[in-house]
Image (cartoon, rainbow, N blue to C red; front, side, top):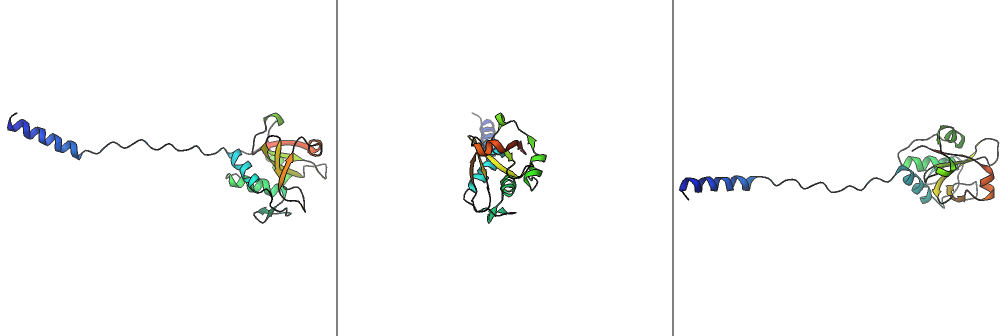
Length: 155
């Protein structure tokens, strides 16, 4: 090998050594949980919290306050009262309920006055009334089945 070829080869090797390595591919990012799962999870996490009329925070909840709180955890703003929530929600057929949907009832009036957050498996999370903590309710129980009005979704 001639001196000229040797110097050229040395120059190429030096240039190659200075070249940067290709960037590794980005690490896979786990998909964000579906909004409905976040909403249902936030409601379930509040089971045992005290009922407090007009409240929507860790100190306590009323039924629509719990729905408001759970949706806020998913970054979704919804109206304050059960009746307003029912009017604003996109209707969902009972057969298509998914965790995070809202279920609406008439308990003490001819208008919607109660709401729960559907958790799946026929159960919903709600703040039933003064003296009772946030808990599960069953859509198939006679009491709630007779008073069920509709279901709706904001996500």
